[in-house]
Structure formats: structure tokens, C-alpha cells
Length: 270
Ligand code: DGL
Image: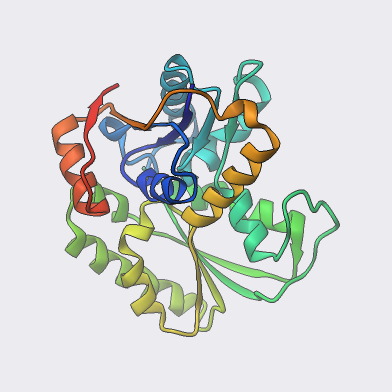
């Protein structure tokens, strides 16, 4: 029943929104673990514990396929989950690979050796835990050579977004971009490596200037999910519409979701 979408909080809604636009008839269950956000300042063990608990909620709701719409969870927990935790018949997908395939100009399933690509200087903006994991650099190294990655841990941005304080979030984005540009003055591509960041994409765009190619994940993940379901239609599931669940305060989370997506969204307790 339904495809599950998991995030630590509101950021996964950027991915959900793109999936709904691409696959309007796909039944979905969204679960935001807002009570425990942000994940990006937690230890890998803590993130693993919270992520497995969150994905279990979606399995218990009948989802056979869950998208981790959270880089922090994907970076810190996904491999460990896939190696020993995900039960037979269930699947958990991350958000890194579609992004890195786009950055390295690869089609799905192209496992040829790493090669030179157009992007040479890549700025990565992500949470402290994602940056510390080096998961992005590891996945990139499988596919590309000669790419210089400079990562900026964007402390505070997710907290500000979860609080609904976009003024603070945008001010923090500007200071993180300035810090990155001091280390790498001329990036040719920038990756928004946290699903919360598209909610302040215009601040990244303005601070980086028009010449930097900006890569977000929402549309790429939606496209990759559409391809995945075309190959494995048994994971589409039944049901209708979208169910929104949170571990936080449903009213407050619904208000923020409406503020960000500008359409009626109502969360229920998980
Ligand atoms: N949206 C999550 C991500 O993509 C945010 C993590 C957090 O809660 O800090 O990394």
C-alpha cells in the first residue's frame, strides 16, 4: 500500500511535491519525524536509530517501498539499513545517487569506470552529519575523476526552517555561501545536499551568483522514482491520495507545510 516518503521534518516535502507533480496518481504516505529534527547535528548511531524507527512506521502503514527524502539519514544510515535491517520484500531508496548521476551526466545503471565530467569545482551544501560522513564524495568517486569538492556544513539552517523563520534561514545561507566561496572562489556547480534547502533556494542562488549551476534533488528523485516504479510496478501499492504523518505537533507542522508549499496540507499524529 502506497510509497512511503521519510524525512526528519519538513524538508522531504520538497521531494514529495516533485513526486506528486510527476506521478499525480501515486498513493503516498509522508512521515516527518519533526519531534526529533534536526538530525544533522546527531551522531551516526542516533540517526540510524531514529531513521529505522521512522521507516518502520511507514512499513507498519503498509508501505513496501520507502524513499529516504533526507540526505542526513541516507548518508548516515542507509547502507547499514540495507546491509542488515531492511526485511525481505521491502525496499529503501536514498536521494544521493540520482543527484550524482545528474552531476556526472550518467544514465541509471551506467556502471562504467569513473571518467572526467564537465563539473570540476563542486560546492556541496549539507548538514554537519552529511558533510562528516563524506558519503557524497564516496558516491562521486565511483563515477567521476578530477572533481574537486568543497563541502560547507550549514549549521542552523534546518532548525530555522523547522521553526518557520525564513529570514534567519536566508541570513544563515548567505553566511555559509560566503564561507564556502572563501575556500572555493569559483565553483562551477553547487549541490543543495539537504532536502530542506530548496525552501531557501533563492538565497543560495543570489549568494552564489548566476554563473554557478545549482543542483537540487527534488525533481531528480521524482524522475528516478518514476523510472524505478516503471521497472517494478509491484511497489506502486494501493490506496489513494496522500497521508501526512508527523511525530511532532500536527497543527504546527501543518501550518509550516502550508507556509512552504502554499496549498492545504493536514498532518496527523503518526
Ligand atoms: N532534510 C534533511 C536532509 O536532507 C535534514 C536533516 C536534518 O534534520 O538536519 O539532510
